[in-house]
Amino acid sequence: MLVPASGDVADLARELRAAMLRRAARLMRTASRVRQDQDPGAVHDLRVAIRRLEAALFVWQRLLAAKPLRRTMRTLRSLRRKAGATRESELHAMLIRTHLEAAPAEFRDALEHVIEMLEERRNLDATKLRVRVAPWRIERLTRRLRRTLRPLASALPFVHDPERDALARVEQQRRRALTALLEAHPSASDTALHEARLWVKRWRYAEEALTAAGGPEIAGDETLRELQQVLGEIQDRATLRVRALELVNEQVRRDNTSGAAALQWLITQLESERLDAVERFRSRPQPVDRGSPA
Image 1 (cartoon, rainbow, N blue to C red):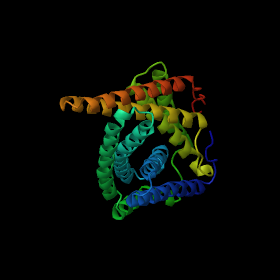
Image 2 (cartoon, rainbow, N blue to C red; image 1 turned 90 degrees about the vertical axis):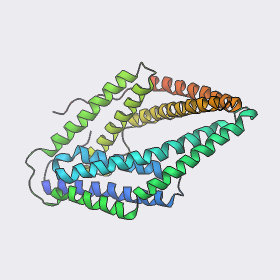
Image 3 (cartoon, rainbow, N blue to C red; image 1 turned 60 degrees about the vertical axis):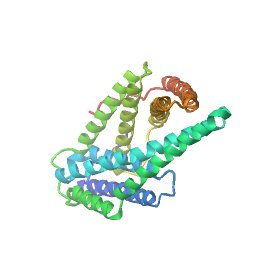
Image 4 (cartoon, helix red, strand yellow; image 1 turned 90 degrees about the horizontal axis):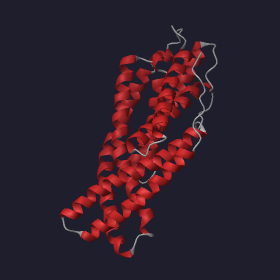
């Protein structure tokens, strides 16, 4: 694990501030893409940009202004969750599309109708999201972030060891992620697997934040990336399965047997893919335990 070398505290503060402003700039660029609503990957990239900024603020929080930090984190969390609703409908529509060709001919019209419904939901959520990433809102978030980072511009000596504190915070994320992975490994529980995915992401982005002041940004540990990907596949299929089950009940109430049958066929495919991804998760090598900070 790389950390900024001990030395001139002013250099460390300057590097950290620049790294966090780079993350903020990335968030601003992805917000602009979301407003244009022409890039299918924009909402996903916005959520990733938010998570990376959140991780950096979490890891290095002892060096930041506490009150602006709390407000900044609340704003980022709220924006990430708002983007999550848009992204989920987007993903679900894309997932169903991947099954259309293999679907029995008598089910395709019903599945295309579900895709249309999901896309309408996605477009409604995207309209609300564009309001949340309006230029004046992003500018306000940027001003709040700059107030959060103000102590890094003061060039005053730190009253504690910032590297040790940052290492301890990454260690906290590591321990929680390893515990969640241990609990999820023998389980097919959606809840346990989702919890593991969340902690793996937090750990991975915390690792990135730890290295940010010591050099160029890294893509993250490959083992964590692979675990995050396979756990994401499981989560996507689990959430779409739940949504499809709700739609089955609705079709049954409407006495639409053909629509219910199409959705039941989709649920079977999703469950098969989910279980396959669970097995791939179990076969993955577990992250290397790098030990606790000294």
